[in-house]
Image (cartoon, rainbow, N blue to C red; front, side, top):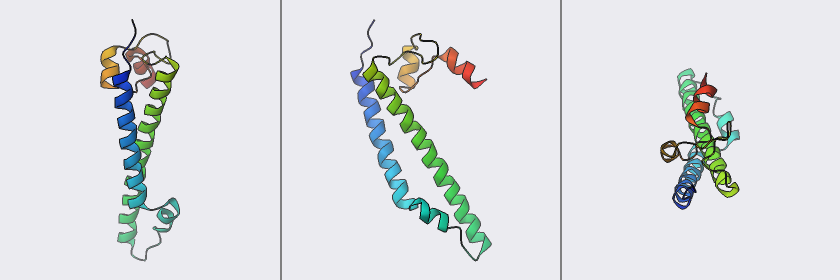
Length: 117
């Protein structure tokens, strides 16, 4: 049974576009990596602590978005390769409900649960 891929592809491409725009905004609002490193040179310890906390939050958010983007890119590659909806670990089909809920899933529930242990 063939999986209809036009909707997942469209949704993944839209999500990729959204994440790229958000990453661009983070870079504009957060400055370059060199600017971020220089931002830790404050005379006031409270200001330095606040700046460090803000920087850590921004880096964590950027990392999360980059990881999501990588997952989406992988799913798009799987669509192109004809392996979308197939578990990367066991090679069995991933439940369509899981693919609908998490379009960039690369593992079936069984393998995903095993990886988390």
